[in-house]
Length: 158
Image (cartoon, rainbow, N blue to C red; front, side, top):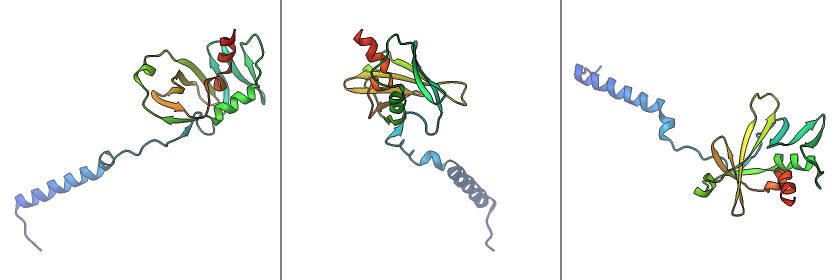
């Protein structure tokens, strides 16, 4: 067996410890994987109970859906709008500065099993619909604001 001086052995121990520190922190040195290109607006498998925006609501009544807070009926059904929420796809993107400075329309989606609602802040600007979810900005790829919050179009006509 090879003999090492005390100084050489200390160097081996130091380099071994540095190697272990590197291995334990390897995830910090590897570049982060990017978020999926497209993801659903609503998390997979959630049971939606109600969608609120200001005083208007789209709520579940048994197996059906209904609008609450509207004086007149809309030309589309509540089921079409809840399906729009389920079909909506978002894509992570960095918004322009003006989006951060615009007052958003806030909608809260209440889901079964959670004490807090899911908060969505929508900003429509330059043909894009931006949504802020958990302090991250996304572009809604395949839905318009009036498909998600139908009472907005109704209130603008009045």
